[in-house]
Image (cartoon, rainbow, N blue to C red):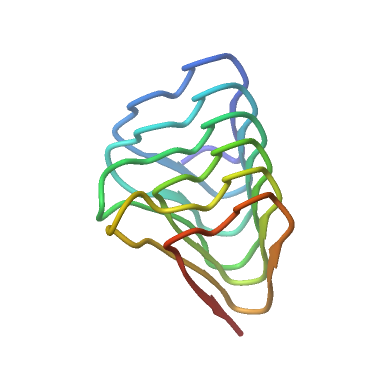
Length: 130
């Protein structure tokens, strides 16, 4: 697996089979890491979803997982309808960044803290901290 994965152009890692890195995963363009088919997993680094829908994953079993690090959902709808797990902190700072759709709840969980600063960041979403 790569040290760092950088998906910096629109749709650059869209619908990938998986994204696994020892270091950071950077999804820094619209829909850059959207609809990945299996887990977006960073074994020791951080995941940063900084643009609109950059980590939007619409398949229920999938998750963004950074067991030792932070996950930042900074873009609008960046982690919409996605299960998010960070060993340290999760930041839902974009508008609608961590919402679930309809009655299909997703879970945002952090070993330490979940920070919610985006507008309607977590509608229909389960939040677990610490």
